[in-house]
Image 1 (cartoon, rainbow, N blue to C red):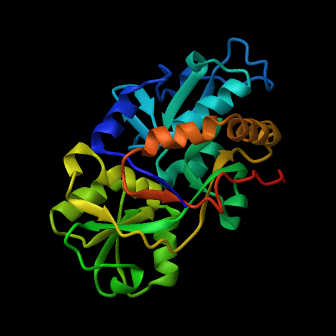
Image 2 (cartoon, rainbow, N blue to C red; image 1 turned 180 degrees about the vertical axis):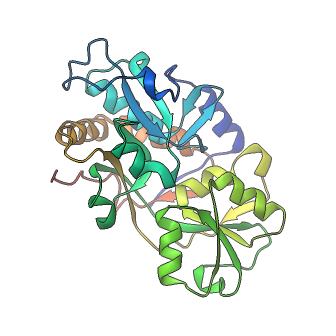
Length: 282
């Protein structure tokens, strides 16, 4: 495993490094994209998370994080400038509907590729493989999901992490919230004992200035989550997106983006799984 560390200050610095597009979430303002490499004057609407430091984070209209960096790289390879990217907030519970209802053209939002989701949306990628873990108070005795029997655990409605807990750990008292920030707030108030989602997301939450020193990532992953690019059913972009992801990895830009967005926390990514090789398009 490769070790990368980041502090709250580093995350704030990364967040401040905009590389940002000036796009918002106005569905009517963005049109559908043109052919790969020929975007012209059109824009592309990309769904991201707005509340995940280090992955997808909105700070007053400036967007930062690993998902954002991958999305920008892919969009640039498809022929779009940064100014042509409109970032749209895509909560976990709304992602399928946003693709089906033509609210976004693609989604980079810690969107795990699953067989169930493949029934309603298409995927390119994966561009990263994470593992589900737990965030707990620093003085907690919780060492893994087996310690959660009868305790309150928070995750986000519609997330793969929530579904995994329901299926594999039915004795856990699962509390669902619309976002992970709400989960952390509830844990700070003593209402829940732990938060669960992918390890890279938890590391970003733990390193925020407001949370510094209060929480720790357990470091006992119990899943593999393949982050893919969500696409509307029947999209013809999968192969071009996979080629862009491969180019990002081979150029070294993928590793640079991951290091910049995870520098300073006790976070390890699995070198046996990352960087991943995009799967063949359906």
